[in-house]
Image (cartoon, rainbow, N blue to C red; front, side):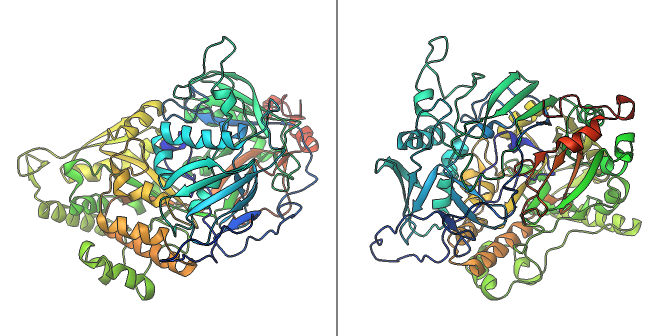
Amino acid sequence: MRLPSVRRLAVLAAVAWAAVAPAGLAQAQVASGSAAPAVPAFRHGLSLMGEPKYPAGFPHFDYVNPAAPKGGLLRLAEDGTFDTFNFVVPRGTPAAGINLVYDTLMTASYDEVSSEYGLIAEGVSHPADFSSVTYRLRADAKWHDGSPITPDDVVFSFEALTKNNPNQRFYYSHVVKAEKTGERDVTFTFDQAGNRELPQIVGQLTILPKHWWTGTDAAGKPRDITQGSLEVPLGSGAYRVKSFVPSRSITYERVKDYWAKDLNVNVGKDNFDEIRYEYFRDDTVMLEAFKADQYDFRTESSAKNWATAYDFPARAEGRVVLEMFENRASGIMQAFIPNLRRDKFKDPRVRRALNYALDFEGMNHTLFFGQYKRINSYFSGTELASSGLPQGRELDILKTVKDQVPPQVFTTAYTNPESGSEDARRANLREAARLLKDAGYEIRNRKLVDARGEAFTLELLISSPAMERVAVFYKPALERLGITVTIRLVDSSQYINRVRARDFDMIVSGWGQSLSPGNEQREYWGTEAADREGSRNLAGIRDKAVDALIEKVIYATDRADLVAATHALDRVLLWNEYVVPAWTLNYTRTARWDRFARPATLPTYSFAFPDIWWFDPAKAAKVNAVGPASGGANSTGAGK
């Protein structure tokens, strides 16, 4: 699965950063105990689910409008700030949308679970044992300055990313080397065979221009890829940076002579002439700016806002459209995440007690207008979520770690405590108090203390005022247990830095999951990632059984084996009580000014905004015809 951008590592969680991330050729088998066969012929695409849906030479993806018009301005909003265009190093906050500037070797389709097709690469080839992969670059692939994209650029990109970014180094840790093996060929050699996902993980590599990064800037100063920079970067993608105001806004313009604009994987895409991101420091101000027509599209993570904040004239007039899109592409675990690196959270009974203290049903009724469901799986909303008791192949897998996992894994289906009545809430707190007592805590002077007399304190670190309401609701129940609770609201930069440095007691965050889990599970729950600054193992999980089950997922031989292994991993993660599961809605709530059009049928696994949408001048004229008294008019949205 594709790793999220550096910026998204900090986003609290309505967490929808689950990119669809494929994983290898399903029909190929590992040649155990024998030499790897000859590398087969180059192919146009790879898929985990047998053959890719689209054959070689397909004209375009089924879900696009191949005649989509080009033009117009799309205005988007971001919270916080940015201070660099260099996403390679994990320091600083990269500008939103900087990925628009670059191309990757392969690109995913939105109507398949796990397929990638050539972008910079015209073909891909790997042996049946998945011990290496070779990509052949397109002869006409070029940078915005007209120079060709070469194997040297690919090798440089791989080495720069893995040398300077710990997360990328971990993600590509099984790639031993990248080397030029032909005029337009690059081969990546792996340290193992049988990892079916590795060829496509390599295909997700963002390619950087070696000649630009090893050159000098306008002042003659050598560029340094290890440092943040606000120099406009050279790219190869559909857009380039047009203008920016540091920390406040950035505008991208469509590259009219983009080398790949007519490729089948790009037909019907990249339709806006300009895409602009405006930055806001406050969620409330950002919402009001939308209502005042200062930007065009927003996803709404707040149930309260969705229920109450959009009753304004432009919506009543039909100029603003609210729409929910079902999420079929990914699962999610959003949670209150205790820092297991701290002694007070190491006992699973303590963590279970924190779960009993969470009155979700009351919270859902009072704060969320009944919109959410409690999460009961790390793969919530997908067929990968465990349920009931283990059986069949899943049970066989779990038996391999039987002595290393909680016994409930085999005897009891995991459930969260329910608190639908006052009696249930009191019973839950009594059970929480019992668990804390069993873990060695007692009440002294109305404070929960351990055997040494040290008080149990808990700082809940958040960066969203919307999440502050949730924290305030949770706090009294924890205090009734004798826990001293502090709610710490910080800005996004502080939050990112503290989470990277593991300087927290508890945060609210989460993990998105694709329908094809694989190597990224090591990054989420693996021991090697637990103490690495900036990894996605936010909780600090260090568990041999979890490590072993992750390997079962990665080395699954077919879809049925993958589902069984994922069920087993999910069940063990749940019964270790590593987090206090939160809630989710299996839809994305969106609001937009009605200036845009889209294909009649959207792809199965994404609503694909803004990739395949386009600016509609006729709609924009109707929206703009009404004056500011009815909610504001966008003078820049009519294709200017």
